[in-house]
Length: 192
Image (cartoon, rainbow, N blue to C red; front, side, top):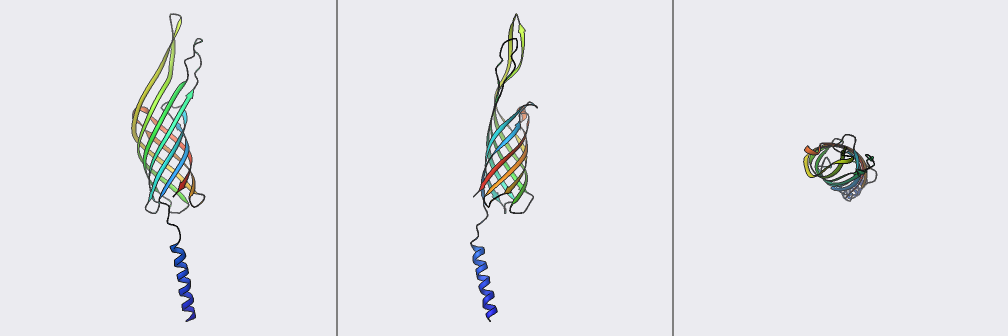
């Protein structure tokens, strides 16, 4: 009989401890830095990003909304003593992504997914110069547009503390007139 009471007491203690464990985090917020290719193959920039995500299905499905900002400026060489000015590129990005986690463990996540991107770009780029009647004519290309298109993302995340994570990702975005951008970045996140 004492063994039955002892077993019952152990069961009550274990159930009460289990009942008081924290529910899994359902939301996350993360910030990161991405290296991103622009529409010219050799032009790269650094993009700051912030993402809010909702975790569903025991953290197997993640729906995220992300915003980013990139500004890059590069100096051009003078042409016949005339400075053509710097190239300036700006991106304001918004992405909506659905990701699936292929690792069911609580500390590691390997996700693959895709979604929709809307990026505002503002470019002022030096294209060339030519000599006309002893002077120089500078040719610059300026554009300001909103580009829409799909993107694919693969990311790895590691929980270093119960609510804090670090991760990295690679992505690809096809933005029609703006071209294809490749992205690789690191991030840190907080789950709540």
